[in-house]
Image 1: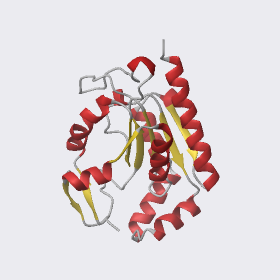
Image 2: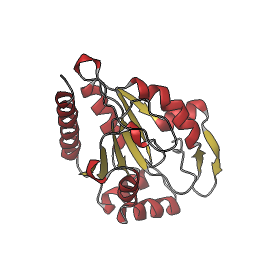
Image 3: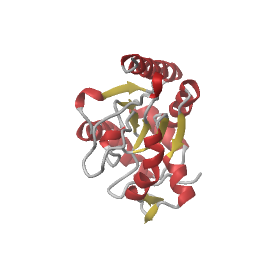
Image 4: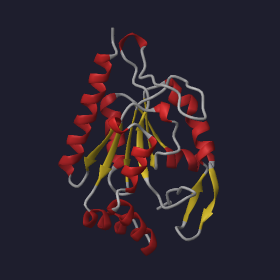
Length: 211
């Protein structure tokens, strides 16, 4: 298994992001500009979770049912070698966040994209309209990560990340509180429930912004 790239400041965390959905009449999910970058009119909905919670499965299935384009940032980074070194302790490459954002900018401005990755605070705020934080029980998560072959430190750090709700706090610090929502991801039925909930949100957004 190829190790997922990590953030410079700590262990892997994972969002899936959903960029602009084109409403009827060609309107997009637009938003205000985030700090440091000019607005391109892009925004959408990320989902955030600790590794092993099920973001990739959800992201791919959501793309299949919604017609949005799916992009896995880990794959994007590997293909473009968008790295800033290698972390021996966690046994994975370190993501070059600035290069990733630059690589995604045009894709996000086009709209209709789901972006899947660990961590959300380096994405421009203007890209998103809603954030879904996926969570899992610690025992379930531990077994999933152990099956992936995570070393002891990587296992411990990711479980602690889930226990202390670090990714939820990160999402709250990066986006407006009213657009951040938590979703459980412990059993197969949760996947279907979460997909349906997000699809309803997309449908409602399109209705609200179509005229």
